Image (tube, rainbow, N blue to C red; front, side, top):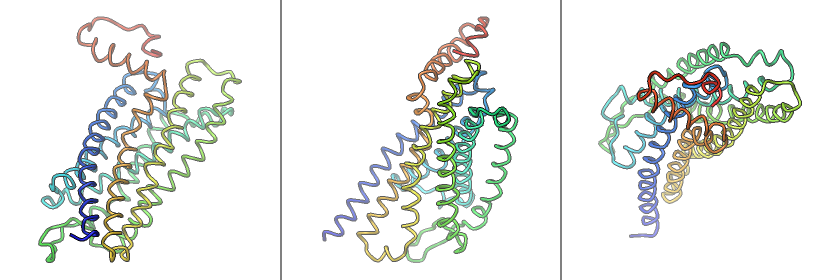
Length: 329
């Protein structure tokens, strides 16, 4: 066996094993973490009344959808050679459609969350009015409708094609124009640099606002909530950037047909593509763990929900928690 063939085989095997073990670990950790985070945010009134927490709740839910539809399918294809897109035309069309809606909704909610915290921590009452749960409901509904409509081409142009060279059915885009749109605009701009830039700009402004909260007359609970949510979002943004940028770059490289002429370079790019995809999904898993590691207040709230609401609800149905605990554990 030549050295180039050995390198190609080794990269394929290593990539397969990493995808199996890391992919399954991310799937379990991300789904479980997202589920717990959603329960915490929906269980406590202080979060249910917060527009920023609402954005993070929706973000957590769509991240679970992205993991179950995108990562699970990727693990089955790479690790076990089971490709549901080859056996089901519906799944061929629906998978990327749903994954893109979830990814775009997630990045949109992150941007809206940090913009909301910029408004909430502003010293100007007029700007603070934009941090509103009713506005949050309308914005999320609006953007979900926008992404549902914008991603319809995935349903139209993705199809099962039979290859005479490989004697296999593959799920691919049948439109060259749409493929170029997806590679050079949808993924890098709508799913990458645009939300990253928006989130980064407002993150800096929100951080500057938070520094001045202590010098303003703000109710204690509201001030602590704003600090908590702002710190969570400020840490989540660099996590999202680290997870997103490598995938965007590698995705553009894989579209370069000239690189396919060198089998070793192409195998290295394919390996990098697999790793960047896992990193992208790791970003979808990170929100719950960012909340746990960043916010001591959230850890107390988490323990309160797990012990008082989940466990004691069935064992002590007649016990009513004090109002101040329900609001501020």
